[in-house]
Length: 104
Image (tube, rainbow, N blue to C red):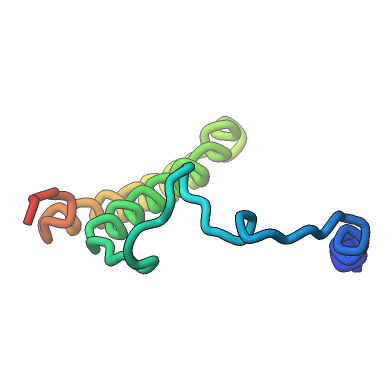
């Protein structure tokens, strides 16, 4: 309820003076040229996905590394299995040549 009240109150209290210049698209100080929808190469998506996977791996490994003394051998084996699965995924991506960046 608090976000709804805050946004509604802000809408009522803020000044509203729309002009033609304020309604234009702003892109780094340049006037937009061409279509607004641009096709991106699928490689950008694949690289971003690989980055997110290994970034999440770091998030999972940090608490384990901090509490390693208290967790014992069982947690070590679990973490090794986790890292092994990620390495298998990396090798699979490498084999499928997802990590190669060749210009078309």
